[in-house]
Length: 76
Image 1 (cartoon, helix red, strand yellow):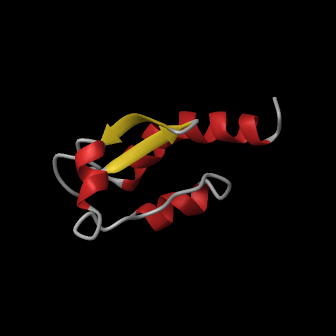
Image 2: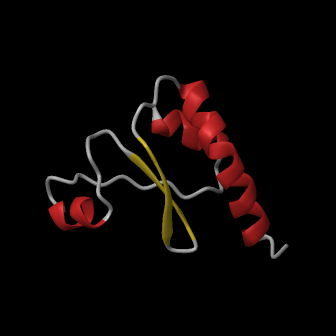
Image 3: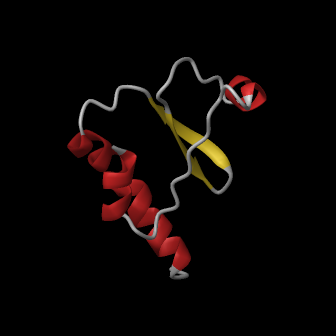
C-alpha cells in the first residue's frame, strides 16, 4: 500500500523498518502495533498512523506532510 502512496509523493522519503529487528526503535517511539506509519518532521515523530483503511486515507493523511516537505526542499 505504501508503495502506491509513495508513487504519488515521489519527493517524500518513505522508509520501512521491521521492528522485529529493531525493538529499540519500536520502544523509543512507543509503537503499539503494526503496521504503523510514523511521520517525522525535522527529526521529530509528529504523527503515528495505525489504521490505514485505504490508499486514499493514507494519501490524505500524508498530503500535508508532502506539501511541507516540498516547501522545505525548495527553500521556501
